[in-house]
Image (cartoon, rainbow, N blue to C red; front, top):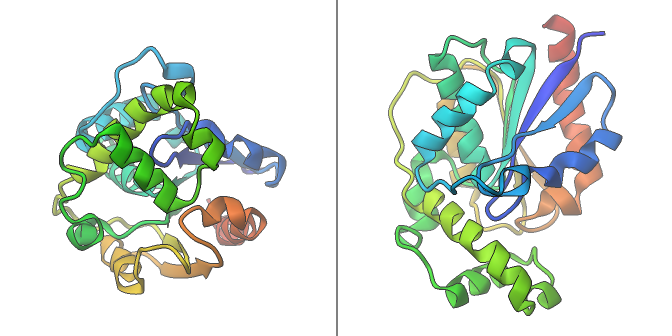
Length: 239
């Protein structure tokens, strides 16, 4: 059986373990490998990053072994940008290209200014961060009201929003792998901003929309996982 590693990058403020439950729902040939970022989860003692390029290079060095076997990359929101940068950094290290890149829930790298504007170039206050969490509708109100939980979450969220806000697109040769974009119909990323991902690969491109808002990957989990499996099944057989 050809096993395919699915390297999963988390969204802002989250541990990569948000993907761990997928292991129970995906076929045995598709191995979910959550890529934990410094400063959270099992890496809580490490410093948070606010430079996307530096972080992508560190992760590429750490994931070289996983990328030596057939693999695909997936990220949601911040994780989508990071997965894109990781694909380029792994290529720079001489690793094989991913079989596919799945970019979920965010505008293409070239469309950051009209997606984020300049809103996140500077650190935000706790109140501003909580307001943004409330707008994204992915955090229960009782969690937002829990001062102790917020004191643990907000520093990570602040650093992650800076990762996105200070992100600078670098012109490089396009990727060669298939690039699949997943979006939520009620999320704020426009069709045009999602379609712009097409320019980042010479391989196949697809855009698939799901009911729900920014966190459609959880709201529509079974449908999302079915889409991933359908896309990767023929690729793993040819790997």
